[in-house]
Length: 396
Image 1 (cartoon, one colour):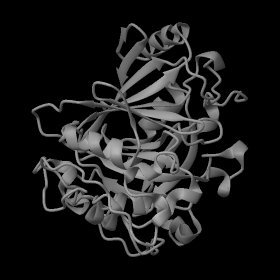
Image 2 (tube, rainbow, N blue to C red):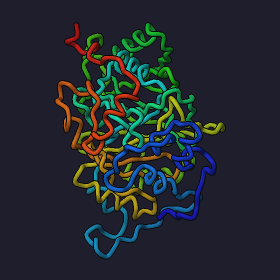
Image 3 (cartoon, one colour):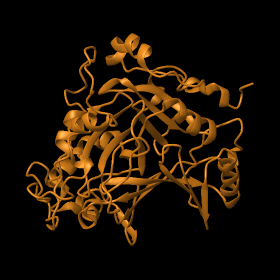
Image 4 (tube, rainbow, N blue to C red):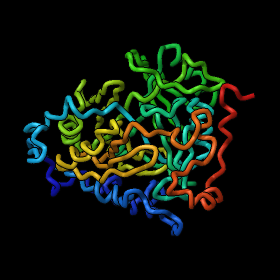
């Protein structure tokens, strides 16, 4: 198991208390840097301050994962970690959460230009003075949800050790790559086409890559009046990561989360319906800076009936995981993998149609029941956003 007394990647920003990051840059979706008097209690009592306090203490160093000792009350699991490989599942990527300093511009880029659907306009549940925007396919399916926390005017960030530095997306064909190259460049976005992939960054510097996908997993597609369905983005392929300790990251991916190694630094977690990849890259020498245009965390998709057992699984490995936290649209467990990246396990469901009709997702400010008491304050302080219905196929 991981030795909690050993820490690595000392000093890099993803290993600091999130409250410290808020004081430093006001760029992370956690404890509010400004006083807040109307926030209801989180469900359960754990909040994202707890998320960071529990998840940041991740083991590092040169120790190897030792064979897991199974608790006496769970004899059916077997005698080591191999018990879970054919039992607990992860269905690839659930969502990827990022930081923006400009929510209106963010909506213009991801909905207006890239053709994603704004499937949920809500607030950061640990700081309801700021947005939490979810972009996805028509149904808001796990496997496509790209999310952003807005901190207006947040300083630009820079990916470094312990941070995700690129988001990978699926496209169906070479013709779709050509379509996107022309569309992005016509809008003033520089691109780089290399073989079967197209790279570009959003206006705040977040790095994206489109890849041709030839597998048989279902396409997750949104509808947009300017984008032919046959060229539309089809969901996540995975991420590229600057691991602060690649050896231990690989052990965690393999022995704790059940990923399969496909090549040098390339890992994949496949479930019954979807898969997702995690490519580990050597980090740059420059220190990472959390801020606008950076990824905050990645969530892997867990079946809802296995979530408690996943929490126990991560905890039993020696990594510090939070309790299961109810986010209303899904339930979450957070922990830092040994290379410093904040991981989440998020349930597949209940989903975004819990409080909105499928035909009108993202058109109004949605607040979970525990947060309805802050609606008046939130609506008065949140940044006005463009009307997303202008890009729908039936828009005039």
